[in-house]
Amino acid sequence: MDKKIVFITGVSRGIGLEIAKCFSNDGFFVIGTSRSEFNLHDALSSDQCLHIPLDVTNRDQVSSCLSKLKEQNIIPNVLINNAGITKDQLFLKMKDEDWDDVIESNLTSVFNMTKLFIKSMIKERAGSIINISSVAGLMGNPGQVNYSASKAGLGGFTRALAKEVASRNITVNCIAPGFIATDMTNHFQGEDLDNVLDQIPSKKMGNPQQIADLALFLASSKGDYITGQTISVDGGLYMS
Picture 1 (cartoon, helix red, strand yellow):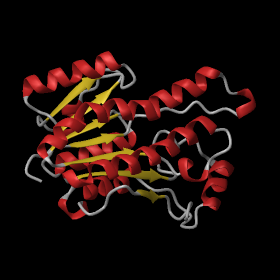
Picture 2: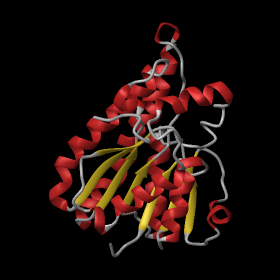
Picture 3: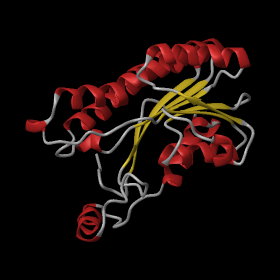
């Protein structure tokens, strides 16, 4: 792809930061967002990047983000919707705000961000949209009805949009990580960790680099005949 500009939400840690590093190393200009200030230049050891403090659920902030990018003429042709939250609780005890916040942060935000850039991709007749989902959206997890629903919704969003824009040379795909070794999973220790690994046929956690490598492949010309797919990266935890 001629123009190499990627926009990544939730860039300050874990999978999002690893994706940013991977794309930066491949020559992309990286635009990354997080809710708070973050030194993306230092994190990537590069000046070919821009960090934007952004709440992806706030449509006023989302709209002003596009204006800022237009002023600098850095409209991305790769969008990676990675930002998300968890508010785990058994369904009988789940509060209304636990449901609303997770659906808004994990699913509605993807609508917000994709809506922001899809017109320019259609105009350019090129682009890639990659939604970071979860194996929880495929198999469900107890205590994660809200999270599982939000990630399952991403799959439907991805398939429907992929059919709408495929003729414009735009791909839309999901990556569904399983247990990945990040700060979100490092609380698994001892017996809890053994119980997790017992569920995984490969008997190990994945690493963020594996997610980043797949995202880069899907965004490249090598992946331009793959669209509307949800690809699990989970060591065999979920098999359809």
